[in-house]
Length: 328
Image (cartoon, rainbow, N blue to C red):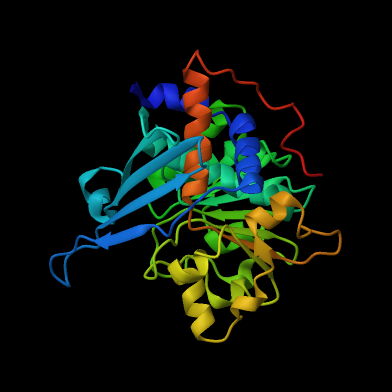
């Protein structure tokens, strides 16, 4: 079994390779049971701590299992709030093929999935992006989005201003026009795309701040207790999800659903529908769009296969065509 470290995983997953791989996996499909979610809280007043187990497989090809630990209180210890490990198997024999850095798989496929959705839902001429939350995933959003839309200007915001300053500096060092947003409400109103990647349990973005033709990308709320956007963010917007599981798992959707802000039938479609062309993405006359993701083991499997085949000299790998990411 190969052990593929962080740097090797990162090198194998440039976004111009990963985004098309996700698209192809969403079109082809795979078996994805509901994730196992277990709380590790011993007492009701303990900090929230969660473990996830996420399997996925394609028959006679690959099987993958990711384990994730989510400890939001790690910020006080100077540690990331999420750790994960990925093991890839041969689905026809059960033989373990590789252990891959699950943190890198998770963060890069998450950013790539949002960029894939934006390639269908964000305005084709979108040139400005606000990143809310400058952690592991948020820091990758500008690079991922620049593979899908002609982003020229990036604003960043985080409740920890030092994190926002550090990300803005890194982006500027990459010759990307970037700055810290001093006022979140003004920044939301000043951009074409807003991408939220936080562990917030209360809304940080308000619908009243959003531009009429903007695209809102909501990444962080993957449990019923988490939420990044208020109810007004969904009013009058065309809503898409990565999978139907989002309607069962995310406080972002469960709350508005319970209050009648929208119904489950109002969801315009899933990412697989967009990828396969079963549902049209943004039109020229489109108003606001919202994409809500909770993550799916399908994305992990797609990323893990890319890593394994890129790192295994016995497996041939052909890079995607240069125009594979553009959707107009």
